[in-house]
Image 1 (cartoon, rainbow, N blue to C red):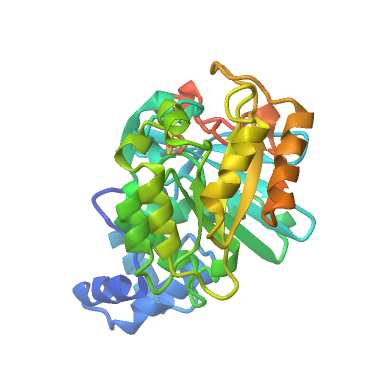
Image 2 (image 1 turned 120 degrees about the vertical axis):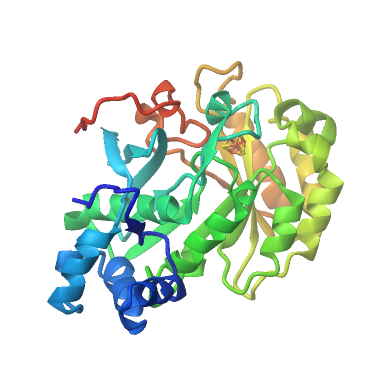
Length: 359
Ligand code: SF4
């Protein structure tokens, strides 16, 4: 499907229109050819220079020799009974994961923003990998391209993206923003900012920086606790950016007219799922234009229990009674470990895996 990486050739994936213009000029070609490549690559999803028929043949042949489109390599595909596909993708010597979730009128693609993660949330399997490395804008955009291409025959008109895979997006800020500018560009991949969500563990300086961006996705915060004491236990990042600082940054965040902040709340049975927790969450978020997604914990290897369904519903009712938008989120693809906090298997730690696909 893709031109394989050739690291001594100029890689075009992840480059902006301006960067492609500069690259073409450095090759002695007219700069506007860069914009043509941008369109062919991101809007038309052509992954071979030979297929970029908006370019003259001589330019295509030259690019085949001197440049590369290094898409992530599909190492493994795991298909779930509900149609979800989890991809293990090879990028150089590391592996990352992306998930494709088909729905009736759209597809949602969950992508990684780092290989592994250093944030160390206690309920998250990715945390057990540690940070393998930051990934590039091309490796981020490439996940979306690979997932779309691999499902080309069944694509629905709308694509949603969620930056909720491996990694903390705001700790790999510049590549993540460079990728988002391509993904959300009407002349690029043309995903609506209303259909793109960046999820953070609560990196306050990153939230403040994101607030200044002209092009930005929606923002989701992993809350997961109703007090600092509780959050410290499962999200050590809370010691650096405690709830007062985090919620203050949220209160100052400039929401667009159509926008709300999303607070993700992974419900860990017997730990953060009591009615008193729900009442504290109501108080914490009282002054924010927000919605809350309640995510019942998916049983895994980690020492937490799936919460009782009646408790989950009671928690949601307490929030709703106080006028908060609150939803219980169904975690799709659990049978292939594609659910929230599960995007990490041992095979993600290194790329020694064979190049095979599982259907
Ligand atoms: S939940 Fe997100 S931020 Fe926390 S360790 Fe996992 S990948 Fe990192």
